[in-house]
Image 1 (tube, one colour):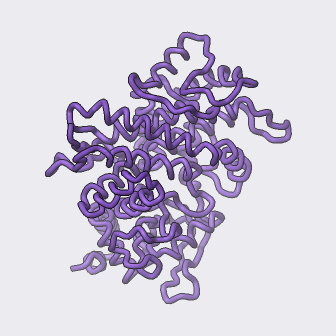
Image 2 (tube, one colour):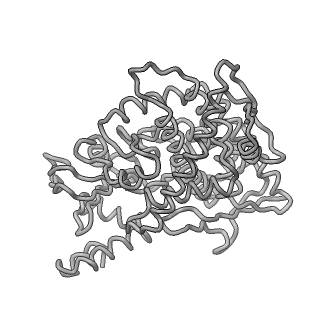
Image 3 (cartoon, one colour):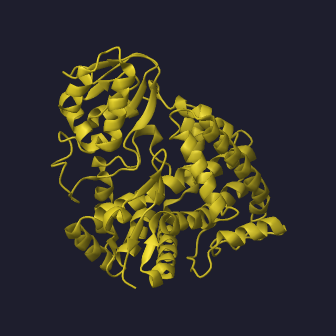
Length: 449
């Protein structure tokens, strides 16, 4: 039987069994399950949540923040770093703080960010070359991203292990803790406390940079206390080269004179610095890892992508990367809370009323396979327009770091593809391993020594 036939055969009163079937289908066979939903029940109301699967319906839901809100994030995010744009809709945080952070994350920085990502990725791959293998998640993707956090964001952290722990703890609770496990939440709150303590001390040194020229190399920050000096030196990796970077984001925030009628004080600076780490490490590492795996598992695509990499055709290579990620996206669905009764796709045969207080799972991954919008959705094609992709979300909560990720992800993959004989390992050894909550754990690939 099909998934829907099996679902309908379960008695209505057996809520647990119906919910279990849907959860298992999404986790183990999402591509086929969502295809069946798109064709037969595109807005699917289950006992636990509502699934929205078609491209225009996903766009509609994500365009209505006053109806489909992000309020569910607040109880987990606020104890970590306070109220912020990620857990609010139509507030001063969205209007003012996202505008300020967009100003700080300048487009003009992108060439330097790309070079930094490429240099650090190359150094990491060089270091592992003698073994003929590299563990992509921690020794390549996250390693590069921590350096970007340090050199570009200005948030190097005490050491790699602590940065990884802070990142996993916050992601596991804020976006993956569906059962509200108190231990997972406590770990996130503790990580937030530690991050704010660390950043509070570092903020004073950032303030001291006022009036100094930009264009500093790496983490050459004037620091006097032994603790911070040690922490910053640990944030750099031995044996790597560093691109000349503009003044980091933390320093820009710390040295900007905001008028008194713009309430963006030190507390708000710290909150937004914490957000940069939370929003960067796990998601971007997942994009790098999953897109790379999809390319490596397609020999014909691998050769074409490699040709683009060898020709330094970054625009074409990026098309291969984002198309590859479509087949295993970072966020197959996004949760939203329905604030009031609302009819999705009104005026169409699939019009469906979603009751207030419903949990809605907005199927970004499904939308990117909607054949009414995506031409030949099951084919791997780099000829798709940019609007076919929803890797960075859609609407008011489109990822703040979209343009940073837009150069970092393809550049790390580029440096990896340039390794001779790069390939996936056979069998289970070559599969991506995940922690609970779909957090990346490990992915080993091989290349010639």
